[in-house]
Length: 490
Image (tube, rainbow, N blue to C red; front, side, top):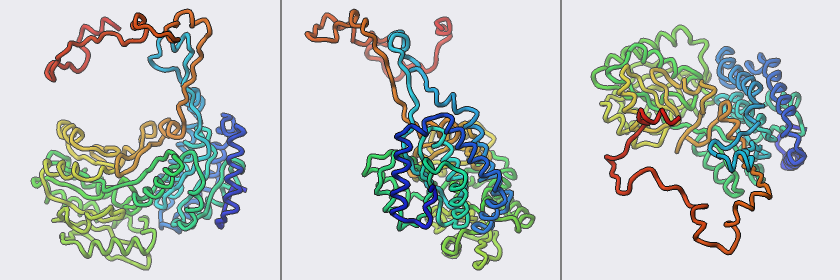
């Protein structure tokens, strides 16, 4: 049985022992098994597309197209990429600079080993994608997997529980329907890796629980991701793309713009164009917009708007019963305002007037966000911002598009998390690099110095070579990059 629903400590313990046994038997290391399970997951999504869309509509009032684009298709694309590359990723590699001794004599090789039994915890805002795209990496790497979908998106959770039990291998992949109160029981068990997507507060709980077992983790969190619009930006394009980003899943995504820094020279023009594009997109797409996940999140955001000292320049009717918080733009906001006090995770857009210097200084003083968005037509400004800040990723002249580059790592830094996934980066996250070297017996004729008695006359056999730099060099003496003459050496 792969589905533990409703949660039972006895059923969980049984499933845990089953997955442990299956991994110990080597079942999941078989490339044929990995391909089979990835294909099963693909057909699970493909054959039940309308059911998934209906479940996410019930949970988030999300349009079927949005669920297809950001949950289902994204996961299927991850599966196809893994199937196309899994043999190459799993093959391993020789050390890049092993030289004659290690790469030829010692036949050194870096094996890609799965960690073992891993736990993947998804988030409610993208209840399929945040769970299964991560699971794709875990399965491709050869792990046995416990899946924990978010209980907040309850309709999608129930569907996942039913379908995983129907499609996936019960000996190696299990799914848990568990409330927060049950997770203490789950985390008492030792997992070989834990991957969590969600809030920083809960992420710390999982990290602390994992530390008791010295279990490695990856945390995909969030943070207050800023956008900077400089006086050299395409103002209309910036307004259009920022407004649109706040409507995706009604702002309920970890890489969304939390607030905007705009230079004084273009501040008024930007806020006017933001109102224009927000109004146009909402008016034309009102019936296709998602709603808030629950009343708790609706009330939290509505209170933040009401407590703000800024000026609301665009809003509309909020509907608590339907959990629809109308997109809202607030100008004349300071960093002390209520709408800047926490990650918004909703359709509120505060716009702060400040110089580029102040924006950079403010961002640098805050915890690192998952995303940073730069709107400018000058590369010098992009370079300056990149050199002065840090974030999980960066998109220039758009919002959160770095998340769509499947062959590039997606992940946070500092408060926004650690670890990465997507493509080979996800495969590597769920793999242990295990170095293997073969040392032939005849080599002892040439390395007698390694055995006692030791003698300093053998120093040349173990010491580093003499450096190509001079003693006493200063900072000004350093050269960066290869000179033209070095090309003749390669």
